[in-house]
Each structure stands twice: as C-alpha cells, then as structure tokens.
Image 1 (cartoon, helix red, strand yellow):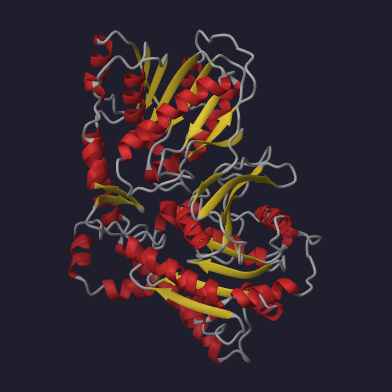
Image 2 (cartoon, helix red, strand yellow):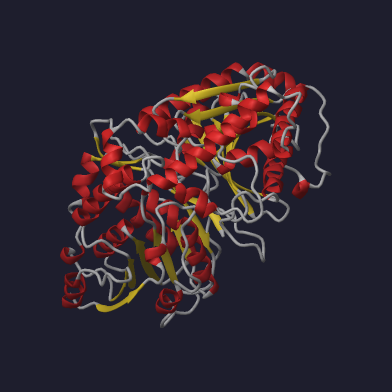
Length: 594
C-alpha cells in the first residue's frame, strides 16, 4: 500500500490490476477510530481480490489539511470524494468506480455518487437513513457516554460554535445544519446501478431507503454486517469476526472489468500548509512500520518529538490530538514523528502475531526503529511522548535507548503488564482514582443511581478498599523502608526512574486530576510520586478538570500549553545532551526488559 496526497487530503492506495477501482469513504470521529484498522484490512482484502482500492481522509480529518471547525465541512467532504474519484480514474486507469461508505460516510458516498452520475457500484455499511437521524444518534451517544462512562470522555461543549462534541471531535452548528440536508431516500439522482445495503444485525434498516433506490431503478441487495453490534466505541476493544467483509468483497468483485495496463499512480509525497510540512514515512527493518513526519517550513527544527500510539488509536491520536499538537509545535520550530507500532493503525502486525495488542514487550523494537529513522533524519536526541499504554511503552523504551533524552508520560495506567492480564477487564472497569470516589460519595446523584441499580456499588467498594490497602502499604513502606522489604516490581520501577535520572534523561509525568493511574504511581512511588520528586530532571504535573483522554477543549488547551512550557524549558538541555557522547544499547535483549 502506498501513502499519498490528493490535493490536501491524505490517502492510501492499495494497488491491484483490476479495472474496477474502489474508494472507501470512512466514518467520522470516534467511529472512525474504532473502524480504522478494519477498513485497512478490508482494503487489503479487496486489493488481493484484484480491486485497486483507495482509502481517503476527508478534508479536515485524519492526516489531511484543515480541521473540524473550518467552514463548509460537508461541501469539502463531498469535494474530497469527487477529487478522489477523478484521481482514481486518471492515475490508475480503472474503467469503473465503486464507492463504499461507512456510517455517515455512507451518506456522503451516496450523495457524491448521485452528483457524479458515473459510479457503477455503491455499498452502504450501517448507514443512517439521514443526516438528521445520524445527529440524533450522536446526541444520544454523547449523553449516554457522559452519564455511563464519564471517566473516558468529557463531552461538555464549551464553544458557542459547536453543536455536539463526541470524544474531542466537534460538529459545528453549520456542519450539523448541512448534514440534515443529506437523506438516502431523497437523493437528487440515481447514485449507481448496483447498490448493497449492509445493515446492523437485528436492525433491518429503513425500508424506505431500499424502496426509494429500487424505484429509481437501482438493483438493490441487502445483507447484514456480521459482528457489528460487538464493535465498541473504544478502539482498544473493537472487534469484528473473521470473514465479516467476505460478502462485500464478493459483491464488489462481480463482473469485474479487465485490467487496463495503466502505469502506476503518481504519488504526491508531502503536504505543506504554512508553517508546517508533513511527509509520510516507512521505517523498520522491512519498512512495514508507518509514521507521519511533521516539520517547520521556514527553519531547521529546534528539537523533535516522537508520538507513540494513544491506546489502540492510530497515529492521529484521540480527538485527532496528535495531529493538532504536531502542527502546533511545528509553528514553534519543533519537528515530530507520529507513528503506529506494529499491529496498530497503518502498521500491520508481523505474520503470526495478532493485531491490536497493547503492552507487548517487542513493541519497543518499533520505538527503536523510529529512533533510527529520526537519527538518520538528523535528530540524534529525541523527546518521546506516550499517553496511556503509550506511556508504558515510552517508560520502558527510554530505559534501553539513550537517544531518548526526554520522556513525557501522560496518564500512565500500569507500569507492569503480566501474562494473563486482561485489557478488556481493565478498561471496562473504568474506575477513577480512589480520591474521586471519596468526593463522589457525598453527592446525592450517586446515591440515586445506586438505588436505581445503575451503579455497582459493591464493586466500587471492593476497588476502593483494594486501592486504599495498597496506598497505605505504600505509605507504610515510605515510613519503614529500612524495616520492610520493597516488592520487586516496585523496586524495579524506582530503579528505572533512577537510571533515567542518572543518565540525564528528563522525565515529566502528567496526570489528569481524577485519573485512576494516580493510584498506580502512589503504589510505586508514594502519593503524587513524592519519592521521585528529588530526582534531577523529574517533574510531576496535575491537569485539573480533565478526563483520562484529555478530551474537553479547555483541558486540551491547558495540556498543550503545559507541553510547550516543558519543551521550551528543556530545549537547551536537549541540545547539550545531543552533543555529548552516548552509548547505544541496541544489542540487549529487549523482550526481557521491564
């Protein structure tokens, strides 16, 4: 697969020699984060079946230029699809085009197909019947998530131009109004001769849509997308069963026109919008790992930042936060590389290794491969930023490679991942720090929810009791260190921080004020890391009014400013560290560390 840009939009071409090209029109926001790797897998499956396939990020989404607050979003998204169709015909020589739309992307695909008039096949996956219905679903989801899982995403909308915000992906009032004009049962023209409606299991879809399309003369088939109900809004837990897309691939491959023998497509290698420039890069021993390098246009970078995956989200980050930070830092003279480790995002897992696996020791090799690429690009000293599972990876990677001169650990939930630990169990518990529960126990609303059976209070009590026991044990160890032995895992973590400090590697730990990871650091280093505070180069910061993912705009802005302050303060120290001789630790056994 080949990364490229079409105008200002990022895309992937999965090359094949068939005469029918497929363009995948993604979902939006959190839904796109959950579906991203499945869309990549579908594109690979289609290419293997002889169908050249293009994945595209609409303008203002993913790695494309623009943002959600720009004007004319729906018009620009439709323009992105029209440009993609024109590019596919021109640069690959296909004689037919098929569009495949996911969720709101199905509405956009259907409208674009109706306007173009030359799309041969149109597949709509879990499509809402209209933009109005889609917005109702999103508003209901925002309320549900805010009530049922406030530890994950603060959904408060604090900007007057924003209608709804799900997981840091805002929809403005203007965009919402434009979306209401999209309706599958009221298309302006025939979208395609052949249409496939892949509906959600146990939800047959709006029969008016199929009836309308048939009345227009379309050959309409309907089916269900197996396993769709099991997809989570959290990308770390999202799963689809093997073969979920088999019927879709079969349908798209029917009556396949012959290959045209056209020359390979042209690749536009960079995207530049003052003051930043971005270039997709491949790295690693077999060049299978992917990242996006962002650099300032007018000056040599003062330093470089390496973004590791935020949980299972691909390299754009939660709420597209890594893209926003990278371009913001470029304006301040800093370069960055946001990567996907193997098995996440756009970096496929090695043969025989399952995808979407976090907390894998051998992921550290991927970090070292990224450091190799950055060193060849002229960056011998690197700041690494990891959020959640990425913080775990950053902490352990920093201990084995001295090119990491600064490491920023954000809401680190676990220092150790043991065989048999369950990511699903950890994430589905969704508990905040124990201090948060002691505050909430005084709130009437909590007791009303307990009485209605909406809160598993006994589970919370067990959780808090366990946390308090470990916190008290940690406090006792602080007082009686000379008497009580320190647990090996605790000692290992403390030693890791001391090694980094002695080597001159700076460590900045950032936690949201109510994050459950605060109990983890308390267990290993005292409350708010007091046992580490005197280490040279160590700092500890608390973000008030922020959730685990730092979702709300006011929290993200405070977070970005905190990062800028840290990076600017350490710039001179980084330059000094880069000039000093260092010993590479590439030769050690990575899998056994940590």
